[in-house]
Image (cartoon, each protein chain N blue to C red):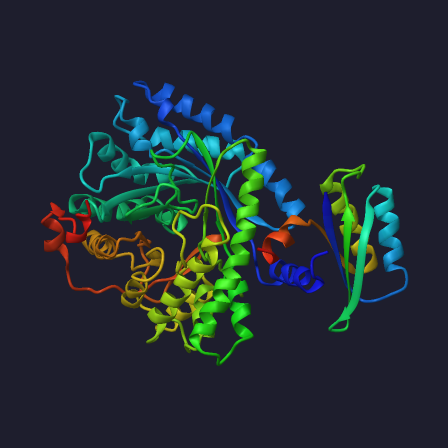
Length: 89
Length: 452
């Protein structure tokens, strides 16, 4: 089962590293990463596989949110289906 | 992988433009709960609702987190209580409302609808008992919503029921006057009521529905408003096309949530209701969409045309996005629950006569409108009759939910708080309709009801 992680905020050293460490703790595999600077803010979209995750989805979401708060970023994880539903026919 | 731009646009819709699922409503049949003893019937009702809906709130909360979309309300609708209560020997049906209220609180839902009667062609004793119990029921419960269907295209308008409802609304306002007459915010009078409406206060679980069902109501005025900001000065067919596309996206989320909830609750999926439901929050207003189309203030000339376009485009966009569309499905124009409508009413541009015209082209009707506290019951009945006539002749659902809060005058504000918002008191015509309402009887069904 895939999910999409979005990260928006001010660019700094170590954002990807910190998020990947957190994901490794949850045993979540990163499938794809794309990042850009949009209207001056760092914007990253990650596709991840949560099928083998060792933690419940709500705890993963909470963990990432806390990490985001520590780093001054907004981090969200959502199941991929919502984007599929909205943007594909 | 999905296009990054699409992903970010979804995030923006949810975080900045108030995209949400307005309600997941579980419909539950209570027909099996009839009993001669009102105590036993109430116990059965409480047990059945708790059994079926126990997991509704936690499941919806899980879906909210996983899909990252807020589900604002979790609700329950039940079989019209007048049908369930008909077997009882008691004439006071308020204890049924108590049982519904307790069950709703136990399940943690926001509202429970179905303290209802369908009397479009005539009233049974149980219907009359239920209607007479409404003021008491709504004043002593917190979460119970009530609706009465007084007309239909097929049957005409039951003017005896219309007259009675004017008095019931006044009495409900009086009984809840210490809370700004909030009872009336939970009471709606319908023509052509639908059996699968997930929205309150008018939700009930019709007799043609299954044992239990999941219906979902979507929202998203803010998303439509923002989409229109990008196409200023374009012709109206471009506006319609843009609304259609936006409505498609919004409805697809509703469909996804409905499927998830249905599977996890082991409950059949009923319908997605494609309504554009506003909230009092800034940026979540239907009125502001109409103004974005080029009207200085909602309620001025052109408003009905703009609303007709909006309502139709929402349906056309939504209908392809869901496997089953139902409920009310259209733009809502509740005055107190829409920041732009409140502003338009305050400045005097939006009046009750214009709202009545607007209800001809959208769902649903004169909704959440505060009228002066001294408005006679007959005038309220006449307002109901006008709306019912629009619904009956145009083959659509119409409704009246007015708030004649005691002691209020034109220019005052009735503060409901939360999603119910604040309603500026609007003027009504002072000339009497009393003799017309006193006639009673029935307005016959229109010619086009004879379709067979």
